[in-house]
Image (cartoon, rainbow, N blue to C red; front, side, top):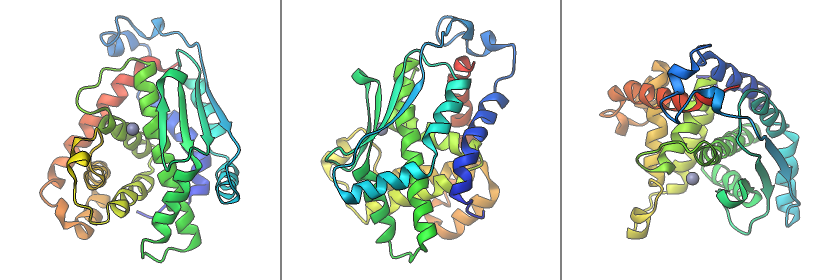
Length: 277
Ligand SMILES: [Zn+2]
């Protein structure tokens, strides 16, 4: 339950993710596990690319400060290195931090690029800073970085759906939320997912869903919030108790969350297994 120190997490996460991928590997039976998905076993999936981490200049001093802060975490390069060593990519995928003119992060299929906008990390920081939670600077920093990592994995999920031609039914936006959540939870980073959930909660801010919001391909912010809570609780009974105590709206759904977590985690692991090196 204790929130982990994010500085430590930046060092641990690549190792933990790697352990997660290897643990699920099963060893030697790739053809049975993954063969039915894409006309063949993992031996036919050739590693032709890598994740490339790039940092572009920020547009102003404020964004520059966030850019330096993110780079100083030293998270993205070792993560990419670890994934490149252990996962096959059919082509290079760029991860670029940049000023975009919008508070967003997105995947550009034509350019095979994940764009992480400095404006978005500033927006996340402001959301937590103005939350009324009176967070210490350390906790504020941790919540911001956790949410940033969560959003990065969401975008990486889009990139992998594209690169691996993964079959997705339902909304891809929900599926890649599940991808980000499962990866972090399997790395024992429930608190990072919880921070991201709180971010969705904060930016919803009692908003009434408009027709365009309902028409959008994303679930509503509060739905994303509750879905993340469900997956955290579904994996960990202690977290489940905490969530029930703090968010009684979850009472009806919580008993089904373990099955929901199992379904989503096993689905993603089966989809990714054929791409392990
Ligand atoms: Zn998305």
